[in-house]
Length: 240
Image 1 (spheres, rainbow, N blue to C red):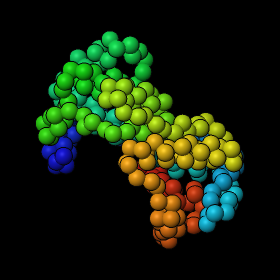
Image 2: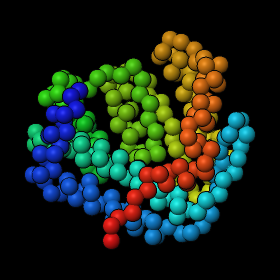
Image 3: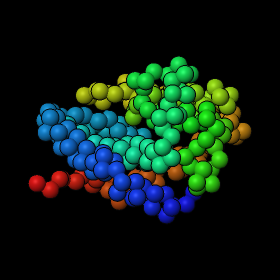
């Protein structure tokens, strides 16, 4: 895929549509600022693993929430704007979504799901201008519901269409205190992904290579700093 043509397309679309510019710039600033000021200053305890040992780290919820919302909000909105820019460039979104609704999807679900599925049912893709004739067929689909539960429904539709396995992680959300049970629940789900992925790859997971690679993450600069200090590197304060 060519980066420069896509970037040019996005910039031209922003110039034509002030709403997209507001969505990408104004909304994150307002949303993140409100999130920071509305978050209670309560301690939040994380359980992390360091060289096989569990370490308890306590930070203010204000620091943690504000810091993690910056990259999450920016990345999520940027992906949605990118999708709708390409769909809107062809003025096809209104034609695609009814095709997905006819499959039984409610009009209340996230429109990124219905837009993409509708485009596939129409035998079209907004990426055709960049050399893609269709959505590349996957051998396995792996989802994570930490962003939105509709991601699972989205991937499951393609799984049925292509007759490929759909596996994933159902992340706990809206929790104030991360406990051992929360960590273990996610860890067990990740471990459960190994057998089906081994079957698709036709190879066994090399635990020794994985164990040898994990310590490298602790060699990165600042890897041993508290969690909130790391994510605060992405912190940005709006100009008042």
